[in-house]
Length: 216
Ligand code: AP5
Ligand code: MG
Ligand code: ZN
Image (cartoon, rainbow, N blue to C red; front, top):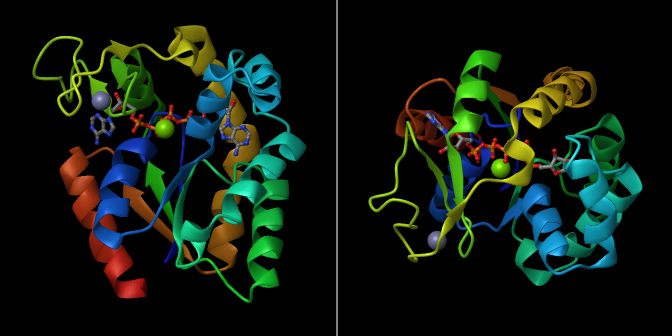
């Protein structure tokens, strides 16, 4: 299965991705996570990406594409993958299609998580992420059992640098201008599945699972 998860910042892509990859046994590829890892390790990609991410802007297509193309060449991608946060521009979507065509492959489905801006703002302010395994929590909707501590690995929880109110507003604006057009792009290819992302995370997941089982 080759799946793309589309949705505004904070729509729940990361939360749903970890559930989907477990059920369908495919690798989870998040360009946001890859950039954060590069930033942590101080790589040239990380240094470049940081300038954009901290402002809530997209990292330029050439940087993003060179990073993701390397990832696609790894052996775990042969039987499919779940893309979380990629593609985010039409240029990226076309590059992905060209990459798949080289191997006579196609996307199985594009899952679009539909969530209102008001919900996004309230989710982002409460988000906490584990510094060790990357698990995502929320102080209102999905609290860790012990304050500031990951339920799974006991890692410390932190607030993402780009979750400040003004950066979130920027990310939403960038999403509308640059990424939202992909909804029509994939609708035109007849592979778009839109899911109501406002429900409880487990209900969102059940809907995604049902929809994917019909197309796999
Ligand atoms: P990225 O890391 O992809 O961030 P994003 O798209 O802004 O999305 P988030 O990770 O913030 O949210 P999410 O949808 O994963 O939601 P989550 O599950 O965490 O990208 C970061 C930056 O990197 C970008 O701004 C850009 O600069 C750069 N970048 C990345 N990819 C790029 C690309 N392809 N091209 C160029 N630049 C790129 O959930 C959010 C919160 O809500 C959590 O607290 C969670 O617990 C809670 N929650 C989730 N689901 C529910 C629910 N159903 N009910 C209640 N609460 C919920
Ligand atoms: Mg995410
Ligand atoms: Zn953890």
